[in-house]
Length: 255
Image 1 (cartoon, rainbow, N blue to C red):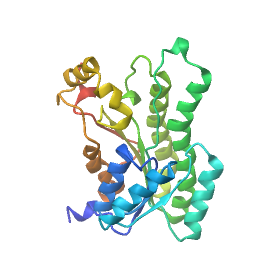
Image 2 (cartoon, helix red, strand yellow):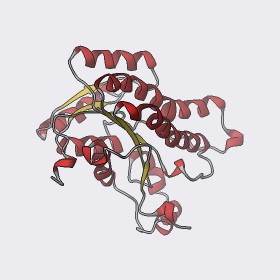
Image 3 (cartoon, helix red, strand yellow):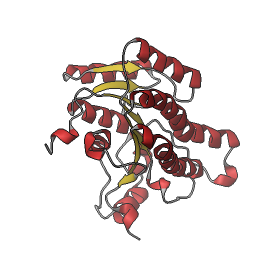
């Protein structure tokens, strides 16, 4: 009984930005838990490579190559899934970008690009998926937040604002859709070993700061998000709604 609560067999999960990084790790973890996976990305070659690698491990996997900032493309992608008889039971809003610059030097276009990619896309894709989930009476939405959903850091203002918005978007989704059988929750990763953070990992001063600031005294690995993602995607979290779980080695809990 205890392990069956976490079984995703028979479920289909769409994970945005999943051809690499955190999204790829979550996708593979959910596949190992039994889910059929729909990978997403804008780089067609990278997406096909990821599909091939997961299929080679025996997982049920397909792809949907749309830009998360293109509302028409999002609608078209879901309509194609409808036509193919693919119902999305689990949506992971993972796609995101970072842009570092002091606010006084930050162009409005760069601000908007980060907000659109990290926050607005989660709303648009979440809304598109939820319309279908509501009709079926069930669904799981997992939004990927950040430590900056809670705490600010200099030079990443648009990312901080977007990820703070992701936390509150998650609560808004729970407030409106919970009565229809949907659960919307979020994960707040700490400093993880990803391509996005490569420059920070390779910066000795920043690397030392992360390790000193984190009780675990190390960076996190993408695969360490998998257990939390499976929990939030499964029946084990059936009465959990509107929450954000930080997977950060303890960083957000200490001064």
